[in-house]
Length: 488
Image 1: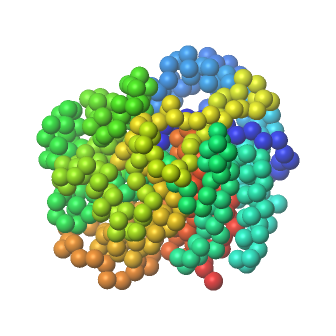
Image 2: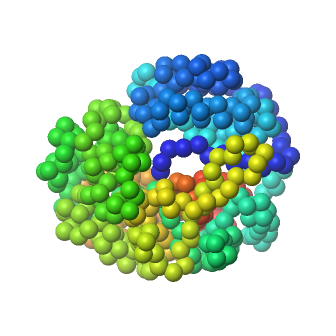
């Protein structure tokens, strides 16, 4: 997913949060967040730039010029007017999520990501702005206690989101593998006034990475690769010899490779109609030096997943798209999923719509097609298409051992963070996996999708949207807050 700032402006009543919940951790990361708040509230672009240079990694700053950083800050400050800390939502060893109330009566959720190792500089900042507080702190959001109450509550909520033009797409909630809520909202194509339908195909963004991860696990399961293999073992001509020798498949999978992103200046300057195959992506990043020593840090890497796709092609003898279609989509029964080319789309595909930044925040931003921001075809890092029914089929196929054997299925459903299983005999799972789940999302201009499955509770939540992030994520978060922890 391309880094960026997501601004949603709605004007409704807001609720307060107690100040006792607003305490940053006394750690280097917490101190950097405190310094960010002070710099932001100064209203001085020079102060903010000094903060960025002292507290953020060079890689985090390289996506924009100094002028662009200054303009972005000035626009944010004009829109928000200052940040008042209200709650520290989450703290991990590499991230802090904080909730603010702004001077312009909005709620801002900022997610700060940090280097794992000292000095723990900031590697990225995610912004979400809304008129409503997050559902987990909104005491007015009564939690339904029955399926019927949930359906009624969710229907009312989504109807309001669609009426406010804050959501367009499909929502599917399944309980114990069976849909209990399946509704559609908004337009698939505004030019032709064509509505989204239950089976409309949406761009998944980075959700496609799970298919790449499963493809790699399939090849490992059948003894064609090991997770500690370096890139050069399977891609002897990889242009960065340092990366080829040091970076392993496991580094690529868990984003600790040091390989950067392809959403960069080269990408911006490349005609998007020329980006159709994995080999078209490699020149955008493959010769760049590693951003850090492999295994020492973690940083989101679309480039790393392009390399994984190239390894899949090298070992399977098929192009990536064909491999995934034959070895994942077909066994799962996913007949409406593929990486389509933008100038050869099938019927019933949603057009993505993105809002341009308004000069005055009181003006309504215009939604425009995202066609000029996307490559002609997605990749092993994201950009394929599917619909809600197919994604539900995918979760069932994975849980029931149709894609991987028991060991690898359990590894994927446990998050794939621990050491992967050793090579096995490739036999299919004999029993249904009973623990773990999925929590994946994708987003870019005019694209937002979430897929969440929790085996313990029995619930699966799928939200696909053809609007900017966090349109699907916000809906998914609200729905999740209404679901019980255990199935009944």
